[in-house]
Length: 96
Image 1 (cartoon, rainbow, N blue to C red):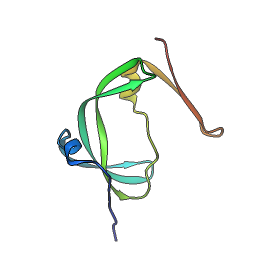
Image 2 (image 1 turned 180 degrees about the vertical axis):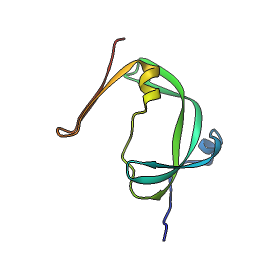
Image 3 (image 1 turned 60 degrees about the vertical axis):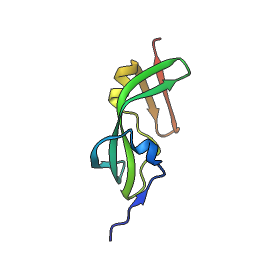
Image 4 (image 1 turned 45 degrees about the vertical axis):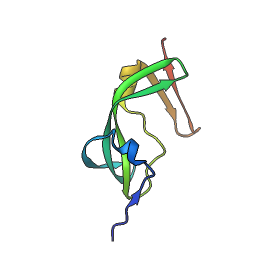
């Protein structure tokens, strides 16, 4: 039996999404996502990045990881991403 969980996203926020819901597998979970075009991401209060992001709208199965940094985000911000799972440490570096 498949169980799905709706995420708490307001109807106003949902109106900004484009495209059909798309099923994706992410970190051991199955999710339905939609696209939020031209999202503005602010890093450290001074680095502004605009790009479309895929937003989870429903959990179909499992528990997704808290967040995943995408390659498109790293390229757009010209960031380096460092992750050490044994010490549970991760960080971004920027040349700006």
